[in-house]
Image (tube, rainbow, N blue to C red; front, side, top):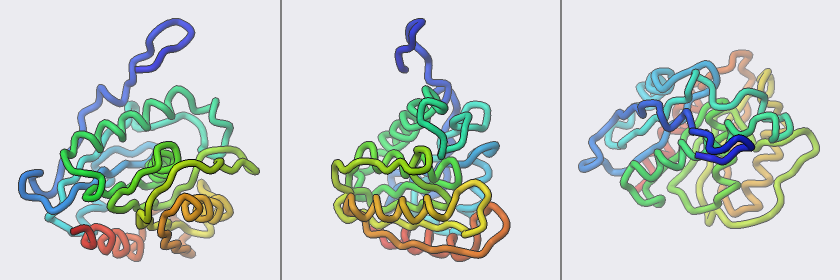
Length: 216
């Protein structure tokens, strides 16, 4: 919940059911919080996880109210996406807490809007996670904006994968995101594709699988 000019504002994303998949938490090797994109739902990312095919991880998939986490583009001024942006980040934090795993055994995975949100979470509250897969996304802010220094990701391995032709995520923002994450102490694996379709391709699936299986 946040406070607006007219009083408390309920976080609609926290009212949505969180999907679960993979291994039960009691027998899982690690956990992953998996965040879908605009006009999607957890079922879209469940299909991606079927392709990733790592079964000994407990997956939690938060659901956006109205199938959209925030209204504008992530390259617009932040005010355009508030309070939805803060609500979305709170929903992801709630899912991280709900896994019951330490951050050293928790991986963040996001596609499109979800990847932008995971990036923002890493930058707003830098901590050492087991890993993060940013599948077509970057940090929030208009062209020319660069997040200031602050905090450390302490060697968190980050997959940053996108297409040079993507209509939603400019490649220069992907490259800027790589620099900012490295400045915060992340170990970034940047992969750029020639896809014309906004999707999670087979190489990104394989790299996500490698990230998940590396958690011990």
